[in-house]
Image (tube, rainbow, N blue to C red):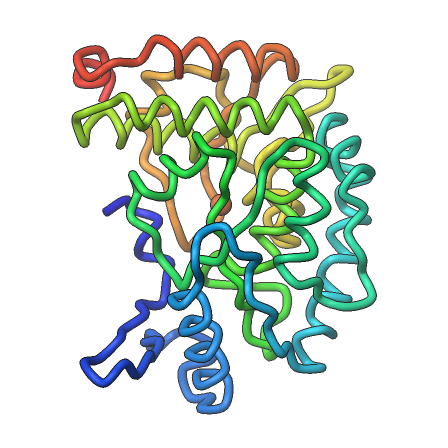
Amino acid sequence: MFKEATLYSPVIKNEQGRVSVIFAKGHPGYQDRPYQEHRARIAKLALGHKPGDPAPDIPYTEAEHETWRMVSSELAAKHRVHACRDFLEAAALIDLRHDRLPQLSEVSAGIKPLTGFTLGPAAGLVAQRDFYGSLAERRFQATQYIRHPSLPRFSPEPDMIHEVVGHGTHLSSKRWATLYELIGQTVRRLESDEAVSLVSRVFWFTIEYGLVLEGGRTKVCGASLLSSCGELEYFLGAEIRPFDVAAMGRQKYLVEKYQPVLFRAESFDHFEDFLSTFLTTVDDDSALVAA
Ligand SMILES: [Fe+2]
């Protein structure tokens, strides 16, 4: 299991087929029975999804649409200041609506003609090789729930805001889509768990948390940073280091707090070259040395 696994509320299916989601004590939905039942219904729909079918439609509540309206609008304003150019260009292509939470099937239908990527439903945590491996087929497995309405600016787990605003925007760009596909191809050819773990760490510090230098200013590329109102205010306070595979492999990362250390590429071309070179050359032996 990769460390990000600790972010997900576990989904359980009992022998009678009843699906439930287990919330930790600190989760904002811990004592909210209707939210828990809603999340269990969403998880059950994902578990029943057949590959190739569109993602099932979710009956989102008015409170969830309001969360989306508020957070997606705030993020779009912050992106204009902090996001890298390629992300802004991709955001213009996907042109996400702000008036209501879109269905995953709608988002996927918008992305497919742009890059061939589709977004399918994940009930919760997907095993590491399964998640990365599906990228090789230009399939991205995304959660369909949205954070608890009581804390709209915070989510302890990856939700629709993260998946759609962060990864969905990436996947609307041909350049990003090529990198995601390459990640899938790389994980499929690696045999050792150590090598996949190294790819996962590099993914974390580039695709999720990467920065890039643009016109002398630090801009944000990573999906996790670009889907977090709070981290987009904080990231310039982090210690910023140059892109380096060995350093990323060694760097401890925090899954529930702001990252104290981030990595920055010299340009978006450098970001692409760095990732492509790493992904096409990493093998089971070299990963053991770097990990
Ligand atoms: Fe993510």
